[in-house]
Amino acid sequence: MITKYLIVCLIFLSYGCMAQGDSAFFRELQSKKGKTFYGKAIYMPDTVKPNDFWGKKLKFTVTEVNGELRMPFVVGENKTRTWILRKTGGGLELKHDHRHEDGKPDSISNYGGPSDPEIGTELIQYFPADTFTAKLIPAAAGNRWILQFSPDKKRFYYILERDNVLRFKAEFKL
Image (cartoon, rainbow, N blue to C red; front, side, top):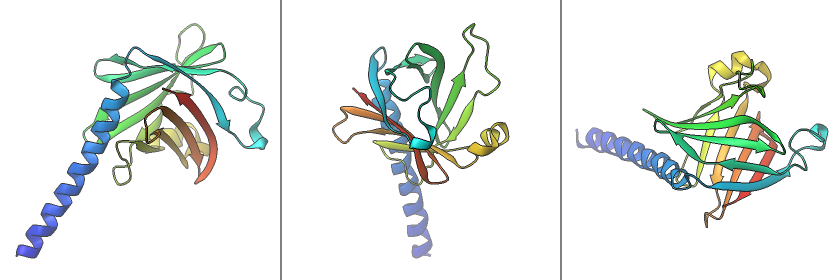
């Protein structure tokens, strides 16, 4: 009986730690509210260069709307993308909002997924593609987006993997 009780306690403690990591990550990004950060693409396979990102100035601004973080992501002069990070009952969720220049939603929008509660920490969160994303963009079913702070919290990374292969990495100075 005591063994079962200890196992249950350990499970609850581990979930508590993961939730604290999610919350700490969200709070750290939330503390940047109102600030704009500049960066550049630092990795992209040669097979996809050149594209919209490579060689362009990248920036994002942290804003908060109704408890979720909205981070307009600007690539060169293109202002049609926004990262949305929100708290969920089980962690965090990252979505990508794409718009046309006139502000109307793009047909490829709202993709992303929930954080993986087993491996996220206060410095890094992993967001595997959800079912909606897999239906919207079948090739992206194996995507995983990663948001990461450097250990000293002076840099922020936006990373995309597909089927466990690095496809894109951007670095921003905080």
